[in-house]
Amino acid sequence: MQPPYSANHAPFAVDSRLSRGRLFPETPSPTRTEYQRDRDRIIHSTAFRRLAHKTQVFVPHEGDHYRTRLTHTIEVGQIARAIARSLRLDEDLAEALALAHDLGHTPFGHTGEDALEEVMEPYGGFDHNAQALRIVTRLEKRYADYDGLNLAWETLEGLVKHNGPLLQPDGAPIPKYAARGLPVAILEFNGRLPLDLGSFASAEAQAAAIADDVAYNAHDIDDGLRAGLFAIENLRAVDFVGDLVREIDARHPGLEPGRFVHELGRRLITRFVEDAIREGGERLAEAAPQSAADVRAQDRPLVTFSAPMQAADKAIKGFLYPHMYRHPRVMKVRVQAAEVVRRLTRAFLAEPALMPGEWALEAQAMKGDERRVARLICDYIAGMTDRFALAEHQRLFGEAPSLR
Image (tube, rainbow, N blue to C red; front, side):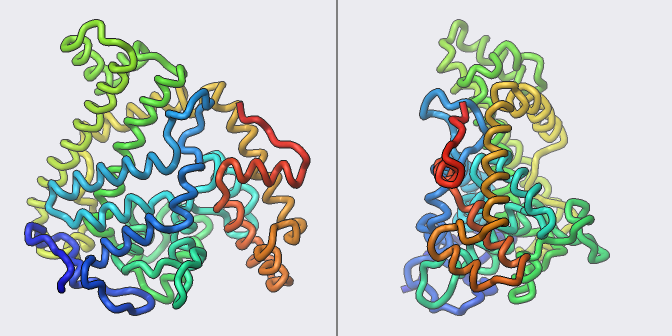
């Protein structure tokens, strides 16, 4: 039996039959392509399940209908498949990358990430992309033959480079990493299985990255409206979004608020997705790549928004930053959550034996290697769900904030 493969794939789509393989060679599955197999491994991982209890964007939770990191991830997966399908890419690889892209995030969303980066600064800092790579190559301990998920090269490449190359043409790190250098986790793994850090990733990885932006824009507006952080009237002055609001008013005058919010979200997603498909199709036609390698060799991404939609994306983020991410209600919770992560990390750095069970034993085995112990503690903190972080704070300090 041969694994299924779509004859409809474009010549520049990644071909699972030509995969560069896995760090630990495995017999191919007779029923699944390499990327279907990777998608399934990601879904069954412990890190994926934890996303259900990790904050997406911190809003005061007055109900159960706000996005978590898991629901965001599922939305990204759906959008990535839609874009990949229209561009005749490998949908399964795009979906696998979408499902894995946030595995390395800390509890409490970007608030936790910022706090962990601050405390870990003397030990190499914290980068959620590097942490995702650590999870899928080392920290997941499920299989008898190896640590990690032993994902295919193309999946690992896309996970690390979905936002673009990490090295400039002269071999220097991109500006984001100029001061500190590339994260050690990426450099170490790249030494074992080179990921071509100076090139773009596949079109499938680019589709997953753009799907992340689409999902963020839509659900942050949705959650912000439902949380009462801003009103529909506030959106009328936002480029592109205001046009959608007026479209809905004209077509559905007097529409009840709940339906209005949903209609706005679905129109926003549709327009962004259609733009990415149109712009991606035009760029691919212009570049005329004949293989996935040709896509990687380009000097710009091929799956992206048009210039007008990039401006719309910037306008939405410019609105959300002060009206949602820095809203006083949100900031009150963020300050509390950040302090939870700081106190936990500092406590474990001062006394690694405070970690439970095998974590404490592993830290003891590393005694004398301060950076390795610090990275182990970072792994422990980053893997926590919101509620487990609060429980650990309660255990160590006898109290925990309510985050309200």
